[in-house]
Picture 1: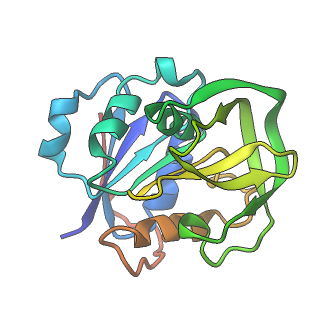
Picture 2 (picture 1 turned 180 degrees about the vertical axis):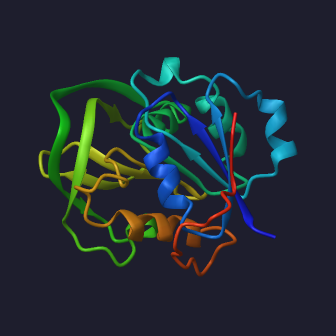
Length: 208
């Protein structure tokens, strides 16, 4: 039986680029729009992993994203990308504010702590940024795991639970280490030895 990934899609053009990355691993994948899934439906899906996607707005307009992170972060590995990381931060009393300089389609050097998502990755590595908002972390709630060369927070993790976020886009061709980061995330859960495969002829993907 394959492990199951639940994807919360915040109506973003990058969501299915991320999904295509995960489709190269031994996973069944469900994708739900962030306003099309009720919290009480999630346990029926029995996910082993949760991905909260980027999005064009802010955490206040991210549907179920904040409630599902709050409800499930103690139980399964969660990865938030861009807006998804901002939602993680707001669950733990952080703030989402305007970045000093918007970065859309820009590449930055990302310096990190070498732990969890960043295990075995060079520091720095180059990564693609598409954001005009950034996070301010509530003291002691989450660990800052990565920053860009201009000092903006690029990674967050919970010190106790398998909850991780990145502000940059691992799915972009401009990000050097996207698949390595995805595999590190999968190792946190039941897919302890992820093996990247050729795309499958029968898609294990369900979209709602």
